[in-house]
Amino acid sequence: MARDSTRPTSRDVARAAGVSQAAVSLVMGDKWRGRVSETTAERVRRAAHDLGYRPNLAARNLRLGRTRTVLLVVPALTTEFFAGVYTGAARVAAEHGFGVVLYPSPEGIGPARDPFASAQAALDGVIASSMAADALTAIRGDQLPLVMLDSDPAGSTGAATVNLDIADGIRQVADHLLALGHRRFLHLAADVGSWTFEVRARELAARLAAVPGSALRTAHAPLSIEGARSATEAALSGPGPRPTALVCDDDKLAAGAYKALRRLGLRVPEDVSVTGLDDLALATAIDPELTTVRLDAETFGERGMRALLDVLDGRVPSRDDIPVDLVVRGSTAPPPGD
Image (tube, rainbow, N blue to C red):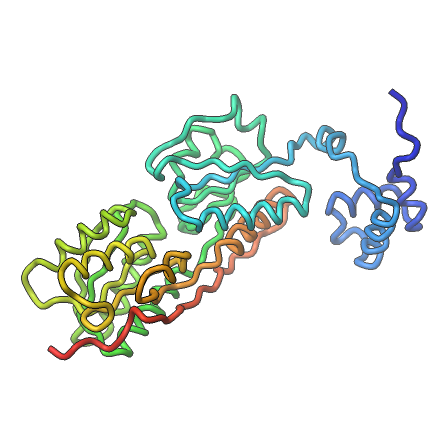
């Protein structure tokens, strides 16, 4: 079939921009940094836009041996957090001509069925949450360029790690509650073997250990509202002084804690203060609204995708953790008098 003579080519763009076809290829393939100037790159982009030029990605991918497809491996999509991670990753991917395939590992406890006959043949790279790391073995994703999310940088098998500053988030929670006067704490910990939850437990224990008179108990719960309710009821029905503050590993656990406290005839925050972590829509749907740590899921996904692009292009990804913020709402107050 003859080529459509009305469709602009890279030669047309090069002529309009006053540059070589090689320069057009570098700019349109996002490989120009360090090879052509910012001014030249902008001139090429403007000429391509004015002419309505679109690179032939299929031919380019065949030439480079790339599919321009990335796999995002996450736990089951039981909250909007990982939907936000996908949105951020897909947005950056689209800017660079990549597609993102979402691959949830059921309940984060085992591998889902491999959707590819050969992952290495179908993918350019993988972005994976440490909570769904088991799925990597099933799809041989650990043999591809790999970026790990929420993973221990010292022990990661990936080419790069991208983390939210969860440790600082927990410190912000602890400092907020300590400043209110709380000294008796219950940590409602997610019963999930994952580095990100280990960080929560470690940082909370370390911060409270530095404050004389503070006491910390821990109750483990499945990542579900009913599991959290049951664990909270059991923990608060035991002997000893009742904790005045519940630090929950995520907002869903906090919602379960609310149910348990109401069943026990306790008020939030008059009798017990409660905090979460994530700042999901759920945090403002419960009453009183939840004091929690806001995690920017879309930025998390964006940074994961940018790190993978850096790895694919031989650049060193940023190692800075993504900042998080404590959002103080109505679920925390000074403790009641003994």
